[in-house]
Image 1 (cartoon, rainbow, N blue to C red):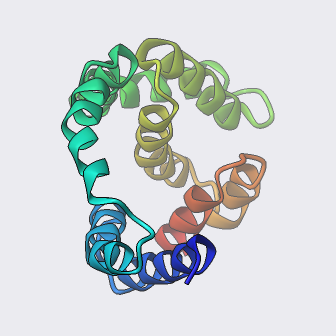
Image 2 (cartoon, rainbow, N blue to C red):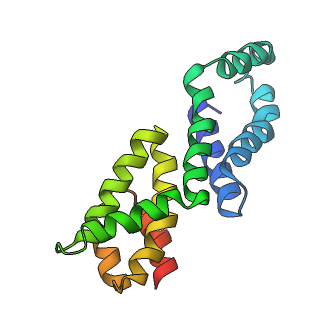
Length: 167
């Protein structure tokens, strides 16, 4: 058996784990641990490589960029939970209200402001995905029009989530 076949088996195993509902991190780690004895038995993996694992974990934990991600996500969540971002979106909706597509423009402006303050795209996408649908529906925008505006965004998982939520 070659590395390519073992890689394919690992991919299918991870896909099965993910489709059965396991979180992605556990699916990837579980697949690697489940197929580790097979790789050792076939001579594709040397057990001495496991000695580098602790050093690799500490190198990842010392990466300043990765250390900064959780506080930014926390800040985005706090903006959403405190209602500050929602109030900002309502106020911007009133400012841009007379314009055609004013509420959509306010979503873009608030999303830009949140992106600059949080620094992480994922936190902004989650915050705006939680804040904007109820406000847009309260202003009388139909879910179809709302989804048309969202279809311009590049995140397909966000569109599918909002389609399931709005329709």
